[in-house]
Length: 239
Image 1 (cartoon, rainbow, N blue to C red):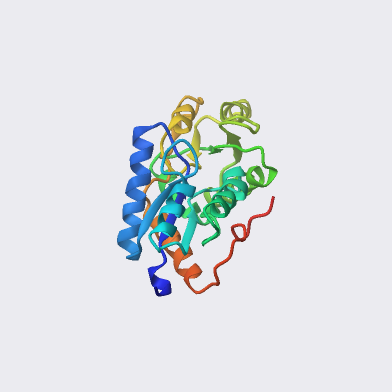
Image 2: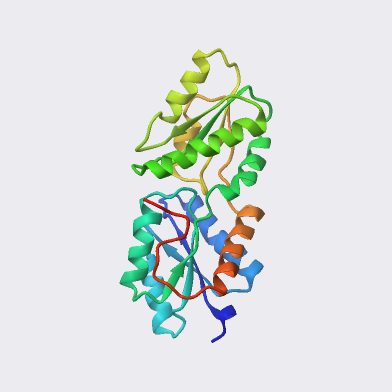
């Protein structure tokens, strides 16, 4: 089997939202069309097949030297712990690439362009107990603030502070009339629904099946094709 035959396993967070699930399935299809790879989904939470299930299935079929691309925006628990554990549990015949992360920021800006004018911004992330993941959202917020030339605060849906409504309220108290939320989320679901009710004047859509996201996933897979198989943690991720 040549290196180009190595499957691409898209590690994604599950959701109980039918729309969010459909977006993940459409993303996998778009990645398959763009790459020509054998693309499989490996759910890290909620859904089956789990990432471990998918890797085991590939191993049994003799296609086990898979490349796992974490479709995640921050280095939270799923990326730093669950994905390496799934690879090890499945026998280790796979390697994980760097997560998608902040490289997808131009797609966030594309979604934000659709909301119209605003004079302040909240960047809404999922939240994490991992300081690294929180710091990554804060760094994205600073970048977006410089790019749109508007004041911006990070807000989190769960596990971290400030919450998205608190960040909106802080900007409102500072005298800003039209506040937008930039959804730093990959797919619609419960978190995006909560953001809609956070008190902002406009909310951008999650990234979804954006061409840049597809391109990033494919580029992660292609870069890994020439690298030796390893059971290491995803690159550029530290606890």
